[in-house]
Image (cartoon, rainbow over all chains, first blue to last red; front, side, top):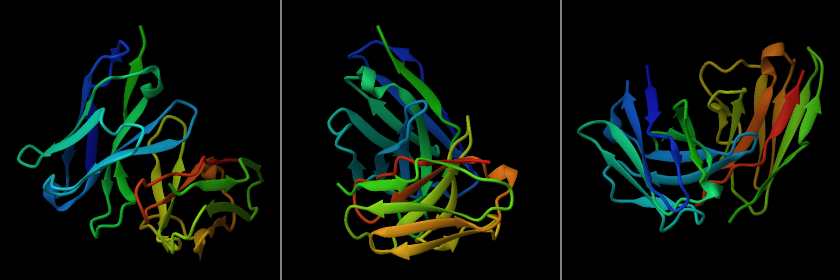
Length: 120
Length: 106
């Protein structure tokens, strides 16, 4: 069974940093591109970033480019999101998601999410 | 960026009804469109990919159609369990945007 489990969400002050983790199991981790998607409570979904199988290709939404960094550890089956210069607008639930194996960028598996609150 | 506009924002229907949800793209995305179902407090769940391909395990009352800029998700005979927010997502080009969602109330 495919499982994605996020962790690392917490309350952080404006301007602060946070690293989210996503532990993967139940599939061959290095075969897949992985993504982060966030959702402000009561609002829609926002794709943030993705990383290909070996980390050689990474993409970012404009809203987080230069502040967030996606990475992965294929030996440990972990996906990460380093978030710097956080602002109130980054308050949201953060989901990791698995891209389709063929290379199309829709998401066939999702974690349960981890909450991030940016507040003084 | 490609913008996706979903309509209606909210749809109220009854068990057994046939409903259609629309997603319009600001430019052509061929058939690179997915539909997700999200229930309160849960992660989104993939329902349809490539505009019309039903995901394994999704009931056959769900179907998708369209290409280019206009897409439709149809539920042929609503069940109580279909109450959720439905999002479309384009995966033709970066960034892989989502629509704002349609809330389906039953």
